[in-house]
Each structure stands twice: as structure tokens, then as C-alpha cells.
Length: 402
Image (cartoon, rainbow, N blue to C red; front, top):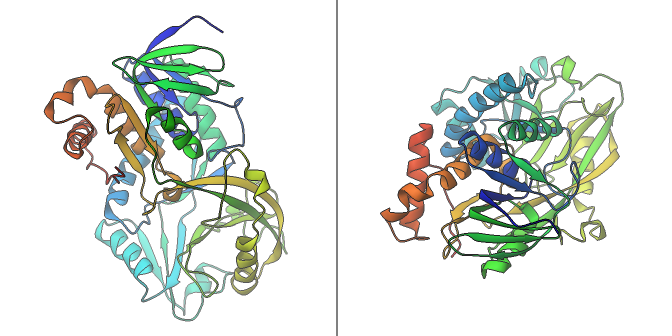
């Protein structure tokens, strides 16, 4: 066991949310420790894999507003690190023309003047060959959307964090959290004391919160990440300008189906079902539900004829979901120097903005904790208003589970 150390902030969980939070804290001159229970890099959580979709095509306006800032931050990080993190591909959104999800996305994009091309049944295949648009479905393409290189992003932001003086300790599992004016965090290798703690532990959030007598209604599900082989290599390749896509609903399911162009594995397209079967994060490999794969096989056979409707590669990922599928961004109801970020999985990549909020929640605790009762909704509102003011952003929507 190493000697006890003291930090301004300890961030628990070195996935993309925790790593970006730690990076923001270090940029604001906070002495910050980033803890990870597994050896880095690893594939046991929610942040691994080569690619993710980045988009503004959301039903809720506050996400579109947040994404405006996100795109600027990604560009800034690329310049800082000298690394390409994002590729613009566009995002094809398909769904029943008159359905609420499709109409909300379409209206929100148009309201915020996001560059968008609306397609019709007549011209769809001129723009998007080798995909069948179902009768009654609408289609649009969000032009700025694209692919984030997830593994590269995680590696880059951790390197930038360390360049700012941040400390990463991996292969250290947190075994206890003792709240107080200085929070004591015990791990398998040491003890740390900090003015504040940020918990961004994804599927293990409630395991950690149990040490603070709090549980959130979070559900952890296992996602089968499927790659489907092209019948003719190159048909759906990113170099052929095939876009990312989201099917909001279809005859096979009311859940989203999403896909990314062939890029990670030669000749294979990543297409996934946007939910999965409930799982224990420590026993995820014992969950073998394939009902989502059956749905995808039927969808691909009907809608994407250039793919073999049998997955060539199946990998695993975990989502952490709240009941309303919006994220939790909050202070602990009893201990206002413990900050919680969870439930981001259903949101797809918005890391930079949410983690800037998390970083500012910590950075400005000392300045604004006297404005309202610690842990109250009003208190959180003051925290978020301060963060939003500093970022020139609207405060994000929060979900309170008290």
C-alpha cells in the first residue's frame, strides 16, 4: 500500500466521461487523480471500441444546443493534441414519416438550422444506394454528423490530462468512500483524500454509491456490438461516402437501430440494436441473450441487401440507463462535494460538454455552495447555472432520483 495522498479532486472511472472530466479539472489547475479499476486500456465497460456516432439529430432541443459546443470542443482538442479524432460522414435518419420520434428529430434540426437534406421516396436511392427505404418512411441526412474514433479519443484525452499534471492510477479498485469535508477514497493499492470526488463509473456507479448510502434507479444492459460482412467489398465503406445511420423505428422493433460505415474491420459494417438484456457488470459474459441479433438479422435482410444477414463479429459493450434515458448530472443529496455523472449510454457521444459541466461543478463548489441548501434541486440549479454561464451554454436537463 502506498502512503496516503491528498488531491483537490479524485475522479473514479477512467472511461470517456471520467477521463474528460479529469482533463477539464486539470485544465483549471485542480490537482486531480483519475482512478480506474482495470488495467488501461480495457474492454470491460462502455468506452472501448474504435468508433462512435457523433450527431445533433436528437429529439430534445437541449441536446442539440449542447452538441453545438461539443463540436467546437472536439475541434479544439484535435488542435491541442495534433490528432484526428472525428470524420464527417453525415447521418442518415429514417423512420415512419408521421411518427413522433422522426418528426421531433426533423423539427429540432430545422429549428436550430443544422445543415440537413430531406430525402423523398423518389430520390432516396440516388443519394443512398443499396439501402431500402420502407414505404411510409421519411429520410433525412444531417450533414455535420460523423464518426468519433473512440479508442483514439480516450487515449488522447488521457495523455492530455497527464500533460496538464494529472495523475492516472489504473488497476486500482475502489473499496471504500468515506464522505466528509475531505472525502477519503480507499483502493486496493492506497488511500486518497480529496476536497471533492466525481463518480463516473458507468455500470459500477451504484456499487460505489452504496458506500455513501445512496442508490439510483440505474439499469445495466449488455449490448451485442455486431459487424456484418459486405457481399461486395466496399459497398458501404466510409470512403464511398456511406453515412452513419439511425432507424428510429421499423416493422421489426420500436427501438432505435444504428449503424456506422465499414471502417473498423475490412468489409464489415457495424450495426447494433440500441438496447440489450439486463446484466450484472461483473458477470456480463454470462448473459447470452441474442434476441437483439434476431431483430437485426430480419432488419438487415429487408433493408440493407448488400450485407450478409448473419453477424461476422460480435463484441460486447454495456449501457447504463436511467428510467427516462436522460443522464444524471448531480451532487450527492447529502454530501455536496460528491458529484455524480451517470446514465450517459443512451445519449451517444456528448462527452466534452457533459464533462465540462462535471468539471465546473467541482471547480466552483466553493464559490456557490452558500447560495442554497446543499444537495437540493435549487442548489444543483445554481451549480449548473454557474457552469452554463462560464461556458456560455444553456444548462442541461437533469434527472433527479431522490
